[in-house]
Image (cartoon, rainbow, N blue to C red):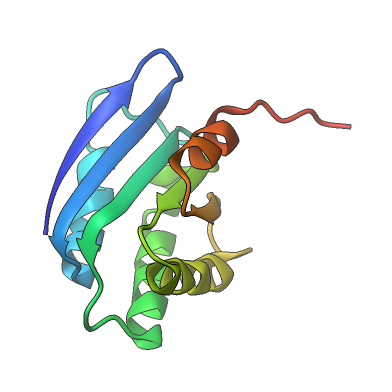
Length: 130
Protein backbone atom coordinates (compact mmCIF):
# COMPACT_ATOMS: atom_id res chain seq x y z
CA UNK A 1 0.00 0.00 0.00
CA UNK A 2 1.19 3.52 -0.73
CA UNK A 3 -0.16 6.75 0.70
CA UNK A 4 0.08 10.52 0.58
CA UNK A 5 -0.32 12.86 3.53
CA UNK A 6 -1.28 16.50 3.22
CA UNK A 7 -2.31 19.26 5.58
CA UNK A 8 -5.52 21.12 4.82
CA UNK A 9 -4.54 24.41 6.41
CA UNK A 10 -7.88 26.09 5.70
CA UNK A 11 -9.95 23.51 7.59
CA UNK A 12 -7.05 22.50 9.87
CA UNK A 13 -7.04 18.75 9.35
CA UNK A 14 -4.75 16.14 7.85
CA UNK A 15 -5.77 14.05 4.86
CA UNK A 16 -4.27 10.67 4.05
CA UNK A 17 -5.04 8.98 0.73
CA UNK A 18 -4.16 5.27 0.74
CA UNK A 19 -3.91 3.09 -2.38
CA UNK A 20 -3.29 -0.60 -2.95
CA UNK A 21 -3.54 -3.70 -0.81
CA UNK A 22 -4.13 -2.98 2.87
CA UNK A 23 -1.76 -4.50 5.41
CA UNK A 24 -1.70 -3.93 9.14
CA UNK A 25 1.98 -3.07 8.89
CA UNK A 26 1.17 -0.27 6.45
CA UNK A 27 -1.60 0.91 8.77
CA UNK A 28 0.98 1.20 11.58
CA UNK A 29 3.36 2.99 9.20
CA UNK A 30 0.68 5.51 8.15
CA UNK A 31 0.05 6.46 11.77
CA UNK A 32 3.77 6.76 12.45
CA UNK A 33 4.16 8.84 9.30
CA UNK A 34 1.52 11.46 10.08
CA UNK A 35 2.51 11.84 13.74
CA UNK A 36 6.13 12.44 12.67
CA UNK A 37 5.24 15.34 10.35
CA UNK A 38 6.38 18.84 11.35
CA UNK A 39 2.82 20.17 11.17
CA UNK A 40 1.32 17.40 13.33
CA UNK A 41 0.25 18.04 16.91
CA UNK A 42 -1.74 15.69 19.17
CA UNK A 43 -5.47 16.22 18.79
CA UNK A 44 -5.49 17.20 15.12
CA UNK A 45 -8.38 15.88 13.07
CA UNK A 46 -7.56 13.45 10.29
CA UNK A 47 -9.33 11.99 7.27
CA UNK A 48 -8.03 8.66 6.01
CA UNK A 49 -9.38 8.00 2.52
CA UNK A 50 -9.36 4.25 1.89
CA UNK A 51 -11.50 4.32 -1.28
CA UNK A 52 -8.54 3.22 -3.45
CA UNK A 53 -7.55 0.45 -1.04
CA UNK A 54 -8.41 -3.26 -1.14
CA UNK A 55 -9.05 -5.17 2.07
CA UNK A 56 -8.64 -8.75 0.86
CA UNK A 57 -7.35 -10.61 3.92
CA UNK A 58 -8.48 -8.38 6.77
CA UNK A 59 -9.75 -10.20 9.87
CA UNK A 60 -11.19 -9.26 13.25
CA UNK A 61 -7.85 -10.23 14.80
CA UNK A 62 -6.09 -7.73 12.51
CA UNK A 63 -8.52 -5.02 13.60
CA UNK A 64 -7.74 -5.80 17.24
CA UNK A 65 -4.00 -5.57 16.50
CA UNK A 66 -4.52 -2.18 14.86
CA UNK A 67 -6.47 -1.03 17.91
CA UNK A 68 -3.66 -2.18 20.19
CA UNK A 69 -1.12 -0.31 18.07
CA UNK A 70 -3.26 2.83 18.18
CA UNK A 71 -3.16 2.63 21.98
CA UNK A 72 0.67 2.65 21.89
CA UNK A 73 0.65 5.99 20.02
CA UNK A 74 -2.46 7.30 21.76
CA UNK A 75 -0.79 10.35 23.32
CA UNK A 76 0.90 11.31 20.03
CA UNK A 77 -2.35 11.02 18.06
CA UNK A 78 -4.41 12.70 20.75
CA UNK A 79 -8.13 13.25 21.09
CA UNK A 80 -8.99 14.63 17.66
CA UNK A 81 -11.49 13.20 15.24
CA UNK A 82 -10.43 10.42 12.88
CA UNK A 83 -12.70 9.84 9.88
CA UNK A 84 -12.31 6.80 7.65
CA UNK A 85 -13.70 7.14 4.13
CA UNK A 86 -14.56 3.78 2.57
CA UNK A 87 -15.68 2.77 -0.94
CA UNK A 88 -18.13 -0.08 -0.33
CA UNK A 89 -20.57 -1.38 2.29
CA UNK A 90 -18.23 -4.34 2.89
CA UNK A 91 -15.24 -2.10 3.58
CA UNK A 92 -17.47 0.20 5.64
CA UNK A 93 -18.38 -2.84 7.78
CA UNK A 94 -14.71 -3.63 8.46
CA UNK A 95 -14.00 -0.04 9.44
CA UNK A 96 -17.10 0.05 11.67
CA UNK A 97 -15.77 -3.00 13.49
CA UNK A 98 -12.55 -1.08 14.13
CA UNK A 99 -14.61 1.90 15.30
CA UNK A 100 -16.38 -0.33 17.84
CA UNK A 101 -13.14 -2.05 18.96
CA UNK A 102 -11.40 1.27 19.56
CA UNK A 103 -14.36 3.07 21.20
CA UNK A 104 -13.40 4.08 24.73
CA UNK A 105 -9.92 2.58 24.37
CA UNK A 106 -8.23 5.33 22.34
CA UNK A 107 -8.37 9.08 22.73
CA UNK A 108 -9.46 9.66 19.11
CA UNK A 109 -13.11 9.88 18.18
CA UNK A 110 -13.38 7.47 15.23
CA UNK A 111 -16.21 7.57 12.70
CA UNK A 112 -16.64 5.78 9.35
CA UNK A 113 -18.20 7.20 6.18
CA UNK A 114 -19.08 6.26 2.61
CA UNK A 115 -19.75 9.88 1.63
CA UNK A 116 -16.82 12.32 1.51
CA UNK A 117 -18.96 15.41 2.10
CA UNK A 118 -20.47 13.90 5.26
CA UNK A 119 -17.00 12.88 6.47
CA UNK A 120 -15.66 16.39 5.93
CA UNK A 121 -18.70 17.95 7.58
CA UNK A 122 -18.25 15.76 10.66
CA UNK A 123 -14.51 16.28 10.72
CA UNK A 124 -14.64 20.06 10.57
CA UNK A 125 -17.74 20.82 12.64
CA UNK A 126 -17.14 22.49 15.95
CA UNK A 127 -18.66 20.78 18.93
CA UNK A 128 -20.52 22.79 21.53
CA UNK A 129 -20.11 21.74 25.15
CA UNK A 130 -23.06 22.05 27.49
